[in-house]
Image (spheres, rainbow, N blue to C red):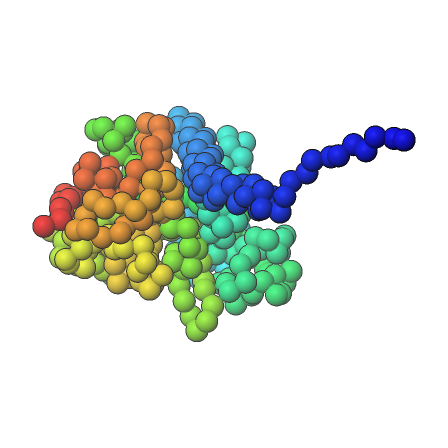
Length: 350
């Protein structure tokens, strides 16, 4: 007669206890894994910005210390014509100068912390539908559903995660005709104008919401990712256009939430309109706040969101909250790209 061998197994209660422990461990580890993933994205973003900074250094060597404009207009023949306000050929963006000569890959202008790596071009062109967003249209009214019919493609990296500092890399406002009728115009800056290049930001993360740097018409958006981030406004005014007519030459870099020059909480960013040009808010709200650490509490107790990555004129990179960059006066001591007298006043919270 064979002896029966009894195999001991788990009881139902024991199995439920094991499952509960595993679930508890997962709930503990998931936030840590999420933070690790976000930190990895931030590190990759900083590496990309570092590459962009190195490309700009090469550009400065080639162009006798002169920084590029953020964008220029292209005529129907694809030639630069800054007086052609209709720009039928689209835009020539500063990123094109960096990657067209092979100094850096176009992907370096993407930030992994942003959807699809960054905002699309104003005119994404007919090459790929992934260069478009569903709710956007180009300058000729073409949408993603008919992208193959697009006639204009900007000379710009397909996705832009970073905006240049307009105090160093100006908008295309080089004549009084195109500068809102004011006496001031933009000029190209030289890096030698900057006394402390290691403390002046060259470019920063854009806000992760591409709609925030777009113009809304009806229910669709015209993207303005070719524009730089203007860190200063005319003293006493949030209107970007005012900087071109302020002959006094005094500008402010605001961070006081008790006036309309401030950095606002992240839950208000989607309601502010075109952040990059300072509609209803200081334009520095266009700077991203999507990298760790989050929940910055440094000003008036408001939840101002996380950090952004920055590349400086000397080529190094950092990760800071935008308020810290204002406190440390990292956007420059003057408007290097604006003609006439220029003095910057850094407003502090009350």
